[in-house]
Each structure stands twice: as C-alpha cells, then as structure tokens.
Amino acid sequence: MDERAVEGLYAAFANVPRPKAVAGCPCCVAPDEDRALLTRPLRELGAADLRRYAAKAMTTWGSEEEFRYFAPRLLELAADDAFNWPSVEVVFGKLGMVPWTEWPQRAALEEFLAAFWSRTLASHPSRPDAGTALCALTLAVSDVTPYLSEWERLDTGAAVRRLHDFTADVLIRRPGERVRLTNAEWDVNVPAYRQVVAWLTEGPALRAVQAAFERLDDEPTLELLLEIEYSLSSPVG
Image (cartoon, rainbow, N blue to C red; front, side, top):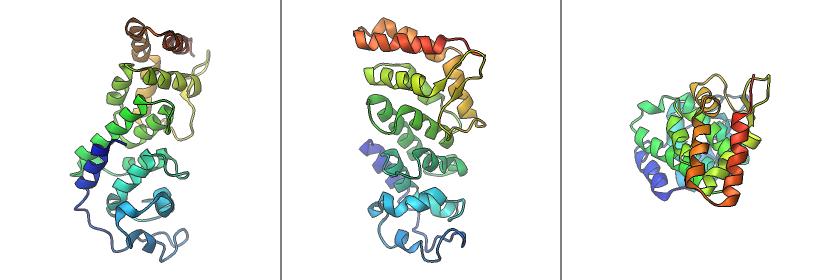
C-alpha cells in the first residue's frame, strides 16, 4: 500500500483510545479472547491475531466503538491480502456497517481507499485482483463512480489487463440472461453494485475501451482491448 495513505490512516485514528475490553457473544467468543488483541500496540498485531475479530466485528464481537480502534490495522492487512480468512470483501464491508463518512477520520479513509484502488490498477498480476478489490469497495462506500472513472482512463497496460480479466472472469453477460457478476460477496442490493453493472452495460466502459484504441499502440494490449470490446458489446437479455 501507499505509505503516505497508510501513515495518514494511523495518524487520523491516533486519538481513538484502546478499548478496555471487547465483549462478544458468549456462544461465539471466549470470555478472555480479547486479551490478545489489547496487550500489544495495534501495529504489532498480525493477521493471525486479528483474523477472528475481523470476521466477527460488530456482528458477534464488539461494537462500532471498538471497531474504530482496530480499523486502521484491519484495513491495512486486508488491503495487502494478508488474511486467508476473512476475505478482503468481508473486512472492507465492515466499513459499510458503520457511518464512517460522519467520522472525523473520513478524509483519511477516503485517501486510503483511493490509494488501494490506484495500486490495484497500476500493477498486474497482484492480489487482490480488480474484481475482488472493486467488490470490496462497493461494500465499503455508497458511490464507486470515482473509482470507475479512474479505470476508464485505461492509461496503462496493467489497467487494460485488469479490465480484460474482469470482463473475462467476473462479468457474466449472456444472451437472454440478466447481467451478473461472479463472486458471492457482491451485494446486488447496494447502489454501488448497480453502478458497476451500469458502467459495464450502459456504455461508459465500452466507450473507454474504444477511446483507448486511439492512445495505445502495442499489439498485445490492442488484442486485449479487442477482446474486452467483444465482451462488453455482446447482446444481453
């Protein structure tokens, strides 16, 4: 992750006090299971330490108050794909469970999420892939149009390859069927999901691909653009 965005995140949350305890559902969390989370500095906690809490935060373990303390480390680890479980989508989705846009740390969170997406588009291959990253963002924010607009620039080969992988592996677009996206973590009921589908099916992504033909000239990238164009322009139900 971008060091500036990560450090900005920790700086923004620096005044959030460490909880004295993180109570959980007695059926799911042992009475002293929070001890390991609270005896060391936040940045010394690794993925193995936080894995169970990351999965259960605010559902069966703790509340928004405790989550705010752990949020910088959880997001940093998830963005680096450090958790085998829970998924990046689950961890980012925890933001969607709280009114984080009303927090004083909003600007730092927005900068971090933007940096996460920019890094995704700038390299290929790397984890998480673009489909996973975009799905995670749709669960964290209500409006993903800035991220889609950034992708539309298709100003690097990596961004083109990301879109090629996405249209080949994530986008399901078949005649007579409703467009859908693979990955069980997508929430079809949130506005951001509908924004992604509209971007793919109502012209913006296709126009971006067609415009890229005018700017890019290496043969492998042009072949990928042709395949993307075909995927985006195939008929749907």
